[in-house]
Image 1: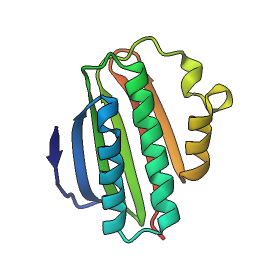
Image 2: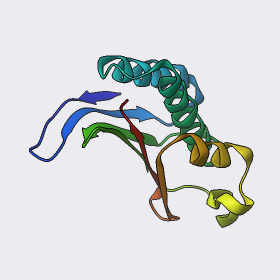
Image 3: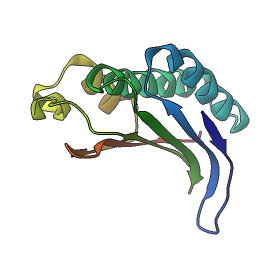
Image 4: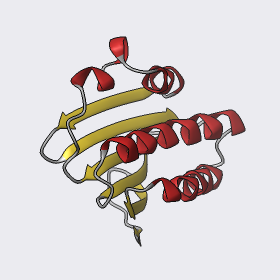
Length: 138
C-alpha cells in the first residue's frame, strides 16, 4: 500500500492511495474517505453518500478482478467539489458491459448515480475500469 500527497495549481490534490484490490481493505478505504471528508468539513449525509459510493465501486473492482492487482484512488478538491477517481491497476476479467451501464446495471451503480453529483465510467478490458465521482462540498 502506498499513500501520496501532492498539490497542483488548478486543484488541491488531497491524497492518492495505491492499495491491493482485496475485500480486506474495504473498511480501510471507507475510513480514509471519511477522514478526507471530515478534513473538508463536509456534511454527515454527504460523507455517508461518499462512503457508500466508494465502497460500491471498490467492491465491484474486487468482485471482477483477479485478486492480485491494485486499486488507485485519488482524492482532490476543485471548485468546491470533492473529486474521487478510482482506477483498477490491472486487467479485469470479462465483465459484462451492461454491468457498468446504469439502465441495466445492478442497484449499486444506480444508487451511486443518484447520490453523487457526477459519475463517469471508463471501461477498458485490457487495463481495468476507471470511475470518476464528484460531490459538492456544502
